[in-house]
Image 1 (cartoon, helix red, strand yellow):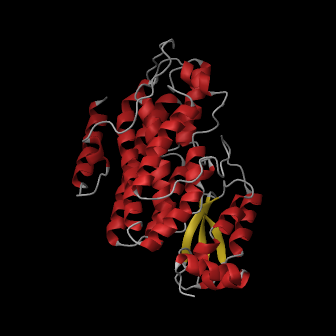
Image 2 (cartoon, helix red, strand yellow):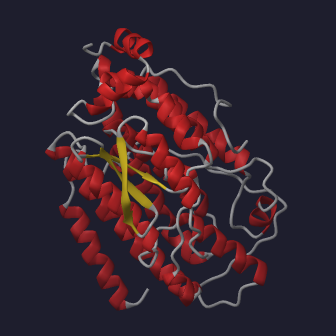
Image 3 (cartoon, chains in turn cyan, red):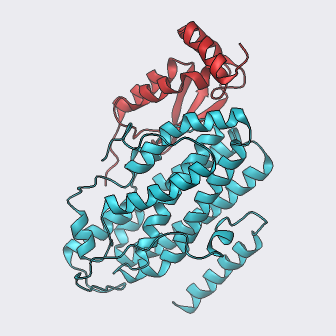
Length: 281
Length: 103
């Protein structure tokens, strides 16, 4: 890392440290107890690949990596990502219940914009044209209507957690720049999910709030499980073979489901049928 | 990847929400996300994206009938509560009993 880049990051670190409160960042108490997310072991016989920024990349590897980063989306040059962030601001202004929640949401946005800088650097190092590509989020879970605080809480609890699970797997990515930033992204995204969960806890404190949360769980739960894609996706073996993923969609979805089910049951919510309203099995 | 226009889906969303008294605003951000506004007072009541799957918007609004009927969703002005009562009074009354809304 260059001296200039190091200096920039220390400024960001300092800004983050000054933003700490009793609640924020939500990942702190979780990681204080150890790694919250499971490690996904790759196949034992997988060939070992390792590519750093500037290395010539095999064509298939480059295509798969770009495909993965298009799905990830958190790039400063991705207008659609900035648009998604704007929807969060809109909701914070229009439907959030109190000043504390609004401030927490502002911290969330700041942290996502930090990721936008990190992924921008990664994109520039990989393929300059990609850095300014507008890639709307393709999965419907990013487009579900959010009409109440509970909707927004579920969005963060489920969708940011999906990002944390993938980032956990990137710790062992064959693409070195991605592996280097994975721990930060995983930790932050887990924190964003915990933010959503904190809001859900507050909502479920009242019988009326809990009834709304139970009702809306039927909208978000299938979408969350669908986010991992089809269990028989033909591209997955290629991702695994090149060291860009460790396991298939079904395995990571199962681990995710175990994690979220435990958290939802702790709120005394009834779990929906895992096959109900699913689009990608 | 080029941005793919989603006119049919946007129209689906518009019609689904119109049924319960919610207006789909103009695209808020680069044509991907839209604000949902109260059909009576214009207050923002949420947002939605244009990559829902076909048929999904109508199904979601239908599933949320009880929440509009009891004020769990919709505008504080009460417009969606009133609209849903007109759509199906029997179902609306049942929702009040189930969810404790003030009839």
